[in-house]
Length: 240
Image (cartoon, rainbow, N blue to C red; front, side, top):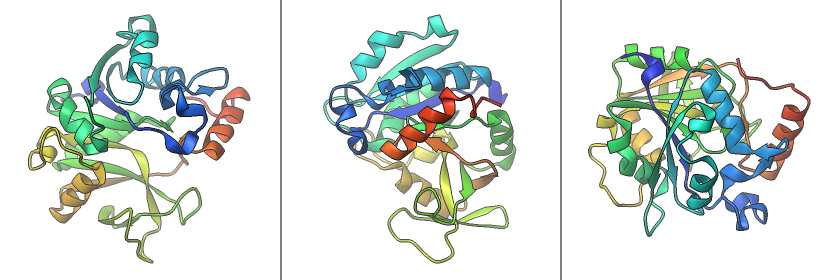
């Protein structure tokens, strides 16, 4: 299985409440960053990495994204869409809903993450690990957000977004890879947080870790949005 052939599930169905009032009428992917919708920057980044199969997990105002980007052909990629339906399913529930479009193995990228990294190196680590999931982590020490991962000896020892421990110096970086089997025990058409699936994988020693050395960028907050906007305008952040 080649990493270049793996699809990317992009989680973009949430309400983006932290970005209000900007997101009261548009979804987070269409928030303007450096003069164009954020999704345009993400698409350019993914295509530069050779990742051209994208499944958008959408919910809140998702029709606006479909209207603007369609099947992705104008960008040289293929975009498919998986809608939550009448209720938002959460990050894990959205992925379970999208599994028929994703196949046996796939990347998962948060819809507010901008990660100019070597995606294939991460995928190769996952594909040779023999595990059902991979989490990229960054040694954060509470710098950019609250650290939520205990990472030691190349292993995810503990991951918990709610119950922090003093040994948690790392943070979930925003990119994961999974086998479809990682979701088998969780219900379809139900609200499921991806964190619950990742914690289950940790408990079963099925979540491998991959440590990133360069920091991540995001537009999940006004601070992150303003920072990335400035960096992209000045050319200080570019795809690898």
